[in-house]
Image (cartoon, rainbow, N blue to C red; front, top):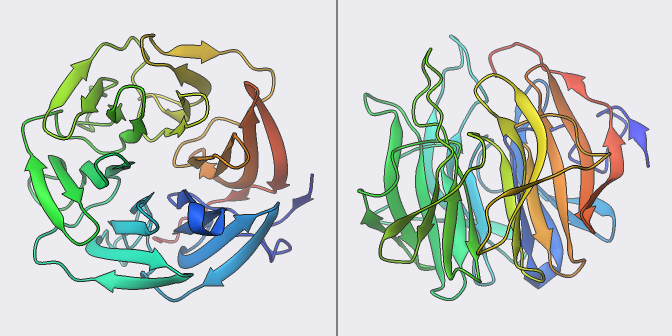
Length: 323
């Protein structure tokens, strides 16, 4: 395990939050894009393979946080995001509506006639049976500042599929569950208010309709979630419960309810982290996030129902500079 500052770890993304992380089968590697460190927003792309980080390119999507990114059929799709992290008077929030595809270690922008409105913190997942990317909700500008619409991407373009399913929300998470044969949506924040009205409900998208599912899991948003294709279970970690950031680890298997794991060692409490399952290694990887004050650059592996710290970058306190 290495412990260093963000500056000395030149061959890693360093501390990040609001970034995206996926597994990409053509290169048998993890691909990380963007997010923010302690003082600025990035638009770089990194590959993690055989225990090493390598920066692939700074060419492609502009710097942003909270984009929706997922692996499709031999491509990576990225949509939207926010040009800043939290922003400020001199650098206000700016939501994006561009679509990008990553193939052969390069990004190319895809111009489509129809696409979702500009937004960030939308949930996204890929249905490999139907070969469709599913995108739900998110946060955007205007009077209706959160969305409850469902879009699909077929490899060439977007189409609006539903507006009557789960209540509008941002910060939800989605995965495809092969046992349930559908996309699972969990949690999300429908309203930010003094009443802290958070939503921990669970839904299944079967390609035509949203079906409400029973769940007794605590209310949460901005957690990270991924699906084990080898053992057929969903793993979820961390998030914000309306009062605090948490470090809870939960597992869901079809036919059962969520089960909280009691593990001795785990990542610290955080939200806006990124987690992905690597089928080649048969394990999950978690990277970064923040706790409100500090931005993390540590990387964890989850296997055998245990967390293992792979490397640890010294957390850096976020600079309040309007980025």
